[in-house]
Length: 186
Image 1 (cartoon, rainbow, N blue to C red):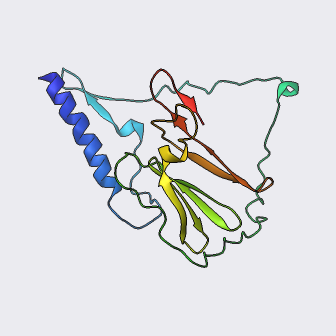
Image 2 (image 1 turned 180 degrees about the vertical axis):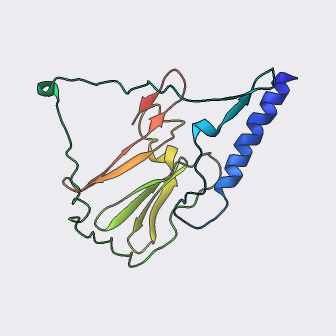
């Protein structure tokens, strides 16, 4: 019974927390509604007498000592730092947008990835690869396994990662292959 009750409570708190995250609200500042002093908290003893719980009045925080010559880095807090911040410019809005490579729902998760070069965009999913121009027109689309099919043992490819190297003007893509004992990375 205790296991069932524990499981029920865990599921209840997980679901309640997940639902609570979906509730939209407004941002507000916290306000003080009550102050509670430890001396006001009481505990009733078995004899019916009330005993006040009080903290240890003789407690003192410990003295922390350190060798100042051993300190590697110390950040000085400047009160005027907030006033001296420079304004940051926002990134410009995109001039256009288009629908990218659509997931065909045959791999969960789809592992969406992509990189933009000067004239083209290369998009990868767990299942497909697409090269498009910057207007969004597809130039080349193939499955991920077909893309790597020229390499030996290239079956069962997944989790592609792609970046564009502007210095060498090329895309760099890596993909694991074979999730068993004979795994490879291309």
